[in-house]
Amino acid sequence: MSYSEENLAELNVLVLYGSSASLEGIKIHKNADPSVIAAAERLFEGGFITQVDGGYLTSLGSEAVDHAHTLLTMLSA
Image 1 (cartoon, helix red, strand yellow):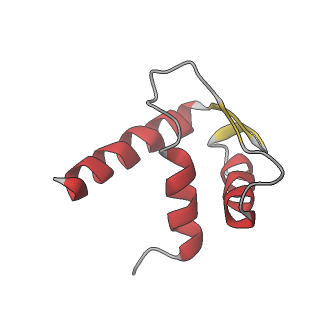
Image 2 (cartoon, one colour):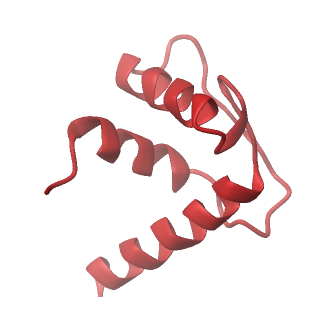
Image 3 (cartoon, one colour):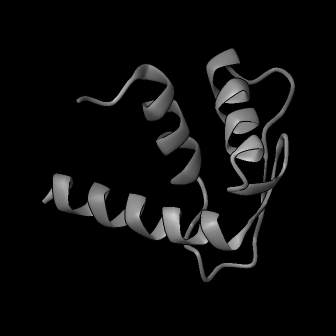
């Protein structure tokens, strides 16, 4: 099994969130790359973020962001 282009786009949106401890949200603008907009929509539908265009992390999203940042750090080492 490998990551699909959709998975990678979702991971890239998740790492836009600084950390799960941050109380800051994000906004995906309508003129963003269509793959980013679609990834945010999928994350919203999956219960990871509070708004279809970003918003804040849910508890599931917070856990996913922690894992995404950990994996990115490990791969970058």
